[in-house]
Length: 424
Ligand SMILES: Cc1ncc(COP(=O)(O)O)c(C=O)c1O
Image (tube, rainbow, N blue to C red; front, side, top):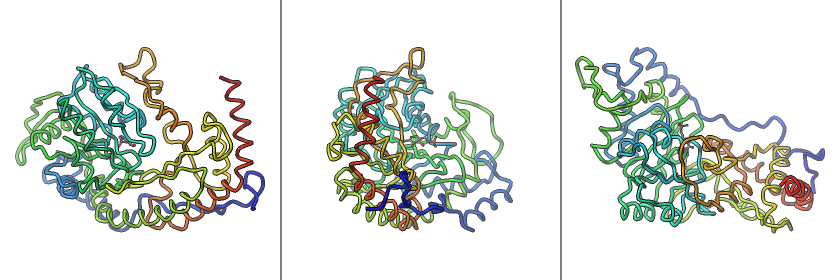
């Protein structure tokens, strides 16, 4: 058994190994960006600008909806989508307790009230039963998040929403072009918002977002909301007339052009990623102390983030030691050269922004979210590149090595767990 790197052994991921760079930048991206710079047309408000409408058409076609409105980022995309659906001050919006904070902020920025509902312990997505429990007579909308790239249980959520006349706005920030029962993320609710942040599976060279819908009226409202409430004429002078209280939520043309170049490879790279990640997960699934992520048969997984839960019992530890075990494993894995980290260190409801005096929210119990936050770690970005297979092999070596040293890990976790209890 080779020695752990934190104890002076050789790293499982050799020193100097770097993850292939993401996003991929080739001559196509460079030419796309330069083309905009040379055109002098930088925003959707510039007469004759073509990159933004072209991206909107291409993405609507890829998703299988009639309309797409490109925006400045995923968070404002969610606010715009919710506002287009009629959500306003005082309305309650159910969101999963585990997500990126942008999901909740998009609600807060409308003066609406996020209501946090618990997640499923395997998919990490909104639990439809928790959605039912979270409803009140003020609930106006639900935001299912396709967390980590796995589509949420949209049929079950849609059925609850239809019964209670709720708007459904998908948070598809982490799930670009992923199939759910034969339909694509972004086409599964009334509207959806995607992020094009540089870290995403469909990235831009900075920040951007896409709002999709099959409803022409909602698309029209979204377009007004991103442009100061103004309706821009196809030709002729801008009238400077605001119909509603919109934002300046526009994407710029450089961002749109870069993403169009990426979109040309989205499916090819997703296929390579799926192959690499599944081979990696086949190995990690054989480690008894780990619960590797999976995708049900009725949907694809975008594999944006890989989250592993830990089984403390397999390390001879009590269930309550999940957090201490995760801390010990992350430390040891980082020593092996694996960038294991936490993704979301607390449920959304416990973000300091919602402390007393902060914006209104409603928090129910979220025991599953609490447990997942404590006993899981993630891999991000290292697996996104189509050539990430060899690196993932080394990461699997590291995870197997950690499992071989489970007795040491248990000692480290026990020391930390004891400390946690004393501190508590
Ligand atoms: C689940 C989720 N929702 C919303 C967002 C917000 O997107 P953006 O960073 O483009 O504003 C993100 C981005 O990280 C996200 O992961």
